[in-house]
Structure formats: C-alpha cells, structure tokens
Image (cartoon, rainbow, N blue to C red):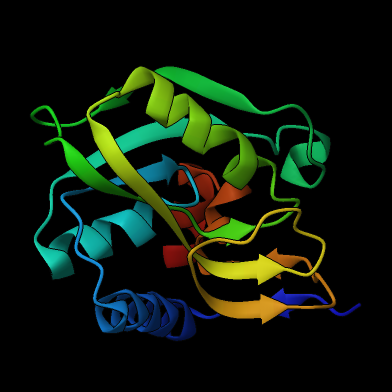
Length: 168
C-alpha cells in the first residue's frame, strides 16, 4: 500500500469535484455541518458555493501516535455557527471516511441533538476500502486504503519559529 500525497491544487480540485457531484445529484439542502478539523476546508468551500449556512462540530479519533493511529471517537458537546442552522435537510461534510466510525456514529448524534433535521446526508473527498460505512457523496474510493498526506498537514510539525527561519 503506497501513501497518497495530495497537493493544494489537487485538494482544491477534489473539493470542487465533490460540489459538482452533490449539485448533479439534484438533492437540495438547508445547511452544512462540517467536522473539524479535516472537514473545515471542505465545509467552508461547500458553504460558499451552495450559499448555505455552515455549522462546525468538532470530532476527532486520530489522537494517538501523533495523529497516525485511530483511537476512540471524541465528539464536541455543541455545534458552532453564527446563527442557529435552519431546520430541514443537512449535509455533513468531512475530508475522508477511513474506518467509517465517524460516518456511523455522528449521524445518530446529530439527529438526537437536532430533531429539526429531517434528512442528513454525508459527503467526503475520499472513502477508503476499509471503511465500514459509505458516504452519500464521495469523490474518490481508495480500495487499497492508503495513508493520505493532505497539504495542510505540513503545519502539524511546523511552529512559528520554523516559518520565520524558512522565510529567511
């Protein structure tokens, strides 16, 4: 299994491909909930393109081995948005479906906490072959389940002093 390295240009194109896929499905929705941290950029772009309000829910399972090994799923108690999200259909956006744990466990949490949601669909850029759940929308299915190196991960190991030194 080879690792998958994604450039900023490729990453942005994949989010655009996801938007087109959602658009072409004909499904309309009232709000987007993105899962931080990986889904922040995905949700932001989709929110802008579809002109829908954005909520942010923090969920994390990659806390072990410097973010390289999945552990238990942690979900924030609240959803953050500038104003309450409208009732109706919501789209849950994330970067990827790895084990599928997030796609399995988060929709029931959202439905329980927000009974005004009449329908919830999921959208990701990548879905790995080992995922126990399939999203409603996915740009790339990766049967070999490679480790994905996303362009923003560079900042996981950089500090402000490193940036200053790099800039000369």
